[in-house]
Amino acid sequence: MNQEFALVPTPSYVIEEKLLVKNLEILKSVQERSGARILLAQKAFSMFRVYPLLARYLCGTTASGLYEARLGREEFGKEVHIFSPAYRDDEFEEILAVADHIVFNSFAQWEKFGRRTLAAGKKCGLRINPECSTQNGPDLYNPCAPHSRLGVTKANFQPDKLAGISGLHLHTLCQQNADALAETLKAFEAGFGEYLYDLEWLNLGGGHHITREDYDLDLLVRTISRLRQTYDLTVYLEPGEAVALDSGFLVSSVLDILDNGMNIAILDTSAACHMPDVLEMPYRPEIIGAGQPGEKKYTYRLGGPTCLAGDIIGDYSFDRPLFPGDRLVFCDMAIYSMVKNNTFNGMRLPDIILRTAGGTDEIIRSFGYTDFKDRLS
Ligand SMILES: *Cc1c(COP(=O)(O)O)cnc(C)c1O
Image (cartoon, rainbow, N blue to C red; front, top):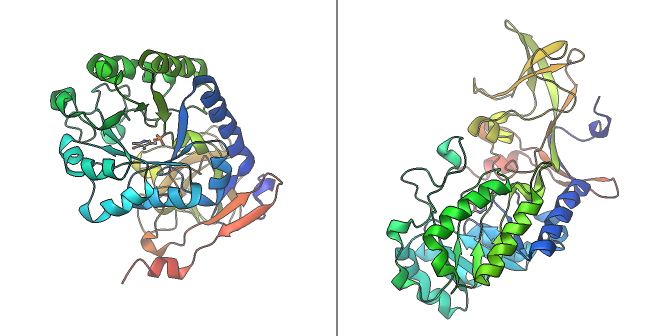
């Protein structure tokens, strides 16, 4: 059933260059049509082996802290941006050495680190909370939820302290279309638009699902073009998901089949360890060739090999019964997977495989006992 994935070791993440390029071409066309500069948000996807490919299309990277910033500097080059809710004194010198744009989360942080940042010749920005939620989901992914710690609200904004600030940053979206951006900008510009005329750049954060089939590219391009014309500034986008959306798979094998009131398959991959967003977000990943429970003839609950009772990926149906050794291929597993996985229960981490444009599979990295032991003492 999954011929293309019959030979790779399991569990393994298989990332396909062709699928990445498909996304990158879309992002490149958005840059060309709108004049925006697009950065990779490394927190979603840090597979630095493909950074040289990504760097042919994108303008740089953004980081959530020192280590990501350093990775971007070392492996990607081009522009390095960083935002952190609060910077540490003992890391700031190193951050100044690797980052070009440093975004502060409060006026206190700006006052504490601003002078050194400007003296190092780096751009300073402030993250704004436009207090406009465009999502109904859980507040885990909503930086505009009540009492959010992310971004300066209008009430906390101090216009008299902007000298030296060259741009503003906002990040409020999660897996959203361009209409949510337009709505957010309405609120943002009402509160902060008057300051944009004097600034060099505006960073619209991530969460733009640009490479999704139904994304309204024209509205995005129109929106960015309008911002650039109105305020005469550089517009940055920093998507994570959209860069590697639907460009990777997690290939697993069935280890055993049980029956406890329903059929249960134990896989060699774990929701808790290898696709933690399945439990955290939570969501149900697609499996190639599988349907909703009851949709096809044979329904199974799929679970991992850890001792966690809730290490369950979900219920799926298949055209034929599952047997030990069968392979199941989970879709959209490039993003928020490798960057979040862990060795809970002493689980081995999946191999990382690059399926090149030429069609060969390169095992870039495989993990073993020392990867588990080295993080413990
Ligand atoms: C998470 C995040 C991103 C990337 O978000 P995606 O949803 O992966 O596009 C970009 N910028 C900031 C500040 C973030 O926190």
